[in-house]
Image 1 (cartoon, rainbow, N blue to C red):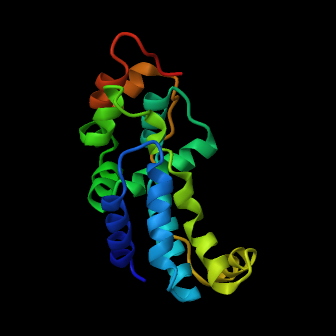
Image 2 (cartoon, one colour):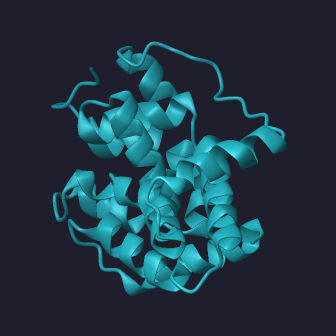
Image 3 (tube, one colour):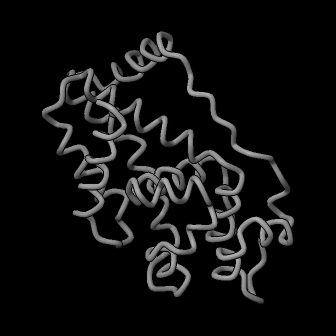
Length: 194
């Protein structure tokens, strides 16, 4: 599976899911169903593609975006947020990792800002577990996935990725400078970045 194939699967799953509080789980279920007939190697390829996209989304400006939208962001929640960016689909993901402030233009983020859907709809941790769950079903051993990933990772070179320049996420002036549109949506005069 190449990145293009991965994104086709994600985009199909995204189209089938609604923007409800269970969006991440819904996308994960569709992906798992699509991968159910895959070979173990194809599932590992899916995981490799997911990890590449997930690493690309590790950016300080995106961490600040999660802080703006949620009012907090731990390591674990940022991982789920990055999965959520993948869950938005290929076109949205590319726009957002290129320009994190483009999150402000996404219809789902605008609905979050208006209070129509919960901000945590972008926390899509279930997407992080699709490959492991499917691999366990295909092989018949829930623990075999991590051994296979470790073996594969030892054979592949790591993608080099820079998360950008780290900055104080508590510096609201800097956050506003880096994310002006997103700040306008979520900060206004009443919310502060922690």
